Image (cartoon, rainbow, N blue to C red; front, side, top):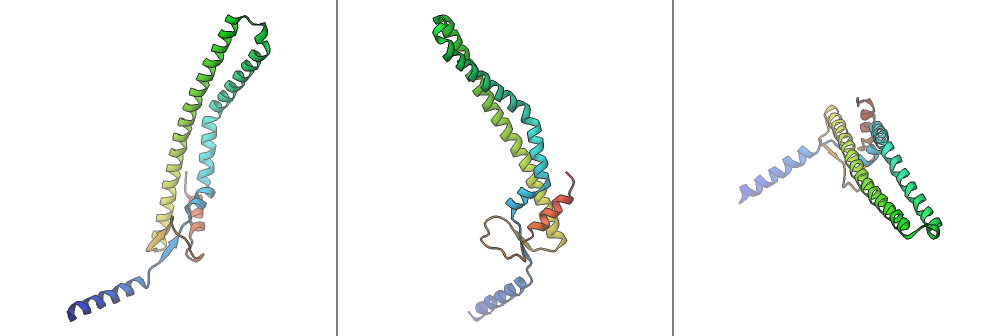
Length: 166
């Protein structure tokens, strides 16, 4: 029994000694994502890729709106078959526009998630490089309630990202 207590106290002492020189840091990932130069470039790539489709969708909506206004304005002078055909055209255009909007949203979200994934991988690369260069034992990100400014290396990660190639 005395051997077990001595062993336990010995392990406890060794554990406390090993934690004495533990180097800990904290990275605020949302702040890094917000200020990363790669994030701005990714945003511009997305805008460039999807701006023409967005303009087409806006044009479709305007066309439908003008057709509805024409129907409201000219319904009294249209024959019933002409009015029915026009309503069917509007309904078909609305259906097409809704489908196009849904496809646009799916494509945009997929591209945005791909860009975000690339950026997150770059951030992890930068954090790991800093951890190795500065001999950190532990770097924390999410779920931290409080971190002293002395252990916050967010600015260093942002600096490292600005020097990394795209």
